[in-house]
Amino acid sequence: MNYRHAFHAGNFADLQKHAILIALLQSLTAEASPLSVIDTHAGAGAYDLGGDMAQRSGEAAAGIGRLLASQDLPAVFAPLVAAVKALNGGGEGPLYPGSPLLIARHLRKADRYAACELRPDDFDSLRRSLAPYAFAQAVKDDGYATAAARAGKGGRTFMLIDPPFERSDDYAQTVAAIRAVLARDPRAVIAVWTPLKDLETFDAFMRGVETVTNDVLAAELRLRPLRDPMKMNGCAMVLVGAPKAVEPAVVEVTQWLADHLGEAGASARIWRAGAA
Image (cartoon, rainbow, N blue to C red; front, side, top):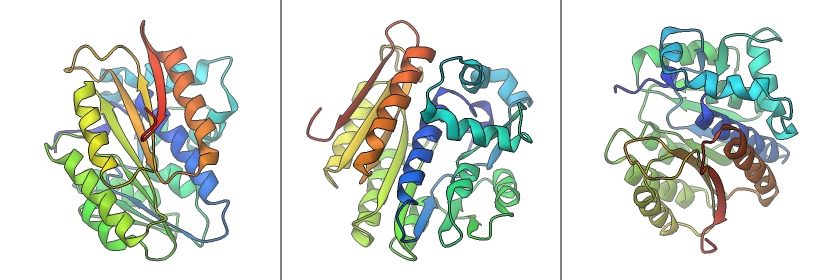
């Protein structure tokens, strides 16, 4: 329970995760049928980038700060920029929306959203952040268990799995949650965020996912070569059942971030299971 996302909010990983998350939601809500969204590790809902934790890490300045200052920002980032500005009263400011606010902002009244968070202080912030949205519920419960119990109820399932990966079983729990959700709703769409420290850990996770489904799109964002497993050298979004129409946005987001925020040797690798 030591992880605090406030240290990392608005960093390069958030930019990839959130831009792809919005693209997915836009595609899924274009369908007439309602959507049932389950967020297994929701966090606080919103973050103050002027706060002590964000200022100490400096990750937001190197992430959302550089993105907002870019003069050649592609349109795929426009919805994220709009959400950041909306949270700050229409202009620039220190607040950054977490996944819960981005999800709630892009859902319809007929959709349903369960945002899970166990940390008491973050849960209180999450509940306040979601209070204006009648279709959204903050749930103080284990997100993996909640996903397995609620999948397939109230519309097509969309699950976001974004744990801190501090627990040794988070990768196994993630694979188990994917299996449980697909068993209840074979049409479910699942988005998983993972850190990229070393390729062995990520490859082992992907092998686990591929025992459950072969409908997998992986987008690896490497800020630097994966030489030091003690560093977060990048991150990845792993999408199960994602609409094929979303793939160009996934490619554009990941490639732009590698090109503009990466160090020497940075790269983007987007591939489908069985076609790596």
